[in-house]
Amino acid sequence: MKGNSVDDGNSKERRRLFNPSVVIASTMQSIKAWAAQDKNGLKDFIIAQLKVTVILLIAYVGNKFEPAYPRNDNHHPEIFWIVNAILTIGTFFTWKWEASKTGRSGGSPRIICLGREQTEEWKGWMQWAFIFYHYYRVYYVYNEIRVFVSAYVWMTGFGNFLYFDKKADFSIERFVSMIIRINYFPLLLSFFLTVPLELYYVVPLHTTGFIVTMITCWIGYKFENTCGMGYWKSRTIAVALSLFVHIIFYETPAVNFLLLFSKEYHFRFQADKYSAWLGMASGLLWGKVGEYMQWAHGFESDQRRHIVSILQFCGGFGLIAFWYGLFGSIQDKYTYNPVHPYVFIFAVIGWLMIRNCTRYLTECHSALLEFLGRHTLETYVLQFHLFMTHNVQYIPVVIPGSGADGSAVLKFLNMLLCGSVFLTTAVFARKVTVSTQLSVVDLVKNITGTMDTSITQVLPQHSTELKDSEHEQDEETVELTKAVSTKVLD
Image 1: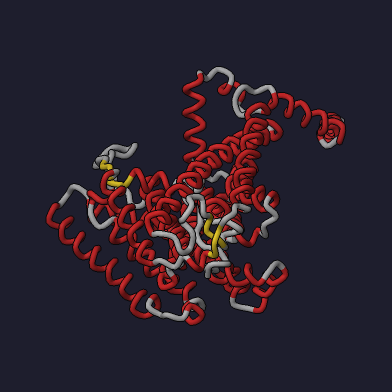
Image 2: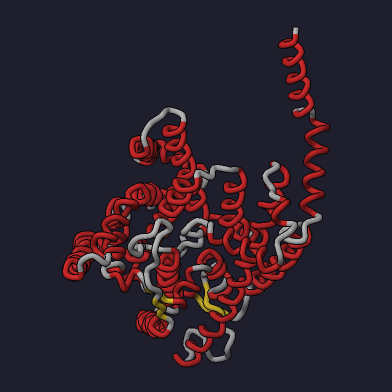
């Protein structure tokens, strides 16, 4: 009888919890608590939406700007290399060095390959090249730009794999946080400017890569913690299952499902069909890469370090030369595109080997490139409407005499002026997006009951700012941030 009483009590409690009126009342209470927050509450959310409205208006005006001339009339490869030379000079003057630090467990300082600063730096110079490739119509670097695109998507799989594998954070809060970070601003731009979302095709690419990586890591985690598998076995099976699904979809007629959305998505997703997966596979092996880096560039043997540095540089150069000699040098993009998903990884690995071929290089990064890399998502979507105009089809003429037939000096000054407005707006847009992201995540935490109110109420102002900074640093390594290329250019 006593057992029956307990069962009846549990049944009543379950009915109470799933009672619509109780759920609605609880949700409203959570929303009220969120609205009353001093930080990341309703006030901050509304302010962020007012700010983003200003950004959307600026983008609208920029996208309709006249006078303007067709972008194809701005074919100047020589200026493309000049602006890249300027970036190289800026890189030199913002080069920063910080000695390797000892890990939490002590011992020798850790040699880190592809740390956060270096990742942002990588994204920064690729984005710079990508944008000016569009602006100056440098057709002959098409294949290299394709590699940059794939490197971004690779980073989505790589960064998210490392995050989920380390923290096992498969919460709704993490999911909502990343979906907002990647999609919020591009979706607003698409709607407000009545632009097809496929113009920002990298956004769905990154979103899909994030979701696939999250599911793959969750499966591996479950294999280990529910089925009792070891770490390597569980993760290897999960990554192999993901590859199997990729093959079944992309190497069979199933891929034509993408035609229901558009031919553009059908092409773009196939061009990067294995990029995120290769990032996951790289993340799985990254612990071994770390062991190698510690052995090769650590503090035990200077002679070994010098020899390995030379061999690593030569190996990386050889991989890039292999890619370029057999594939990258193909002039016809329609011949290159079908093989690209299978071969771009050689250039990516080659670059990482060269960039990290000495301990000094692993400890350095460019502050300028890191800054550019932090804003790749915003610069990606806004380039179509502010740096260029009419959905990236035209070049705005702000300075009189800087049209298609204008002087080279005036055209360069016009580019600098438009670029300044474009970059400033992108920085502003990122801050607004992150503010929205933090506010919505706090709302979700309040609703799901995971909000730690005991901490947020007692933290001083500078501490809450530090917490926001840490939250922001937990964004995926490749923001997605982030991307490069657009359908109308290629």
